[in-house]
Length: 358
Image (cartoon, rainbow, N blue to C red; front, side):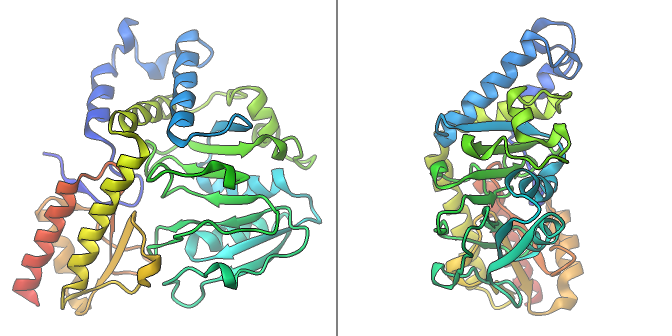
């Protein structure tokens, strides 16, 4: 029996996508072998790759002057590859710090360029800084921020306006969750394992004028220009993850695209936050104007009940609710593939648990 999987990533995938992949696993399109077994240079897989890119471009309405790259290494690799491709050794880059993943990106970027902190949520990272707090440097190579922080559960409700510097966004946990004006960004990157597909794949969407400037020591396989010129096949790509991403893109299109997806995500998040706010046992400490739609964090006002909550939730088929080790507590990730029925089951469990233990 399948459970409701609230894990932050690798995360829940659409059931119909998994079933399609299962049906095609041994014999893909009558070829007598799995899609994992065919050459990435074959016409068959080239068609898979091209169709996936087309569908992603359709979903996000990606302008023609942006390249779409399908890379390995996870989003964390981009913490290095962004400064290697967009900045030189003496360049300055502005970073907005709103939590764990922002901190990770900042620490890595400091190995390659001068980093200035343009804004800092600080403290327990329970908010996002407003535009009025952001202070950008003159001549920055780029500005980097993390629209959604999975660990603390904070999300920007606006796109920062820079002083002309290209805006770079780590959208690993929010990409494809709602419509997006890609033209506001110079570069977007996202690990696949939350809203796109299985782990092992990272999508990079980068404006044409920002590629071709990698510093000389950048390995060729990490040079955005070289990757783009070779249609993301400079080396053997993660073919199965790419194929799975393509299935997810089609699932999103069948479901009404990103407008419909955003509406479903809003309903799920609002229902769970409302249940937390109405409770005497559970609490969410994030400022209401910065609450994440994708990662809902909460604590129990009696921490000694944490172990019982997790054990009983698992027994009820609700998995992946333990908060990150950095913050503790609980976290329910409500990515696109989490159905409303899963959220309703979680709310019902939380209310029953409070009735018995509150």
